[in-house]
Image (cartoon, rainbow, N blue to C red):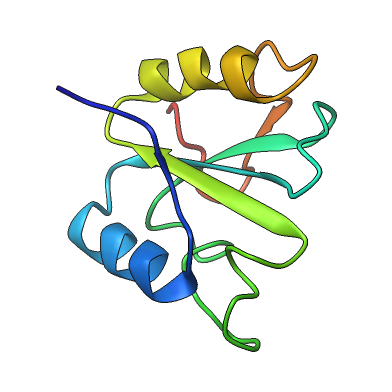
Length: 98
């Protein structure tokens, strides 16, 4: 069964993306604002590389949720982000649904 996983730390997130490069990840603001919910592939260079201090990927200004199935993420959003019904955008670098 596929579930959505909210990542608590960078090491956990980076290991998950390494093991699941074809999975999907949403990047959203820590305040869970519905206006910024961006879908990526787990292997996307814009989210899966830590070039800053530890915690910058998952416990700073942004959070990550991942799943092998984008439909699981789609259903996670309205249950966990106030006013969020779906992703607000898709990454133009990794083009996750193409």
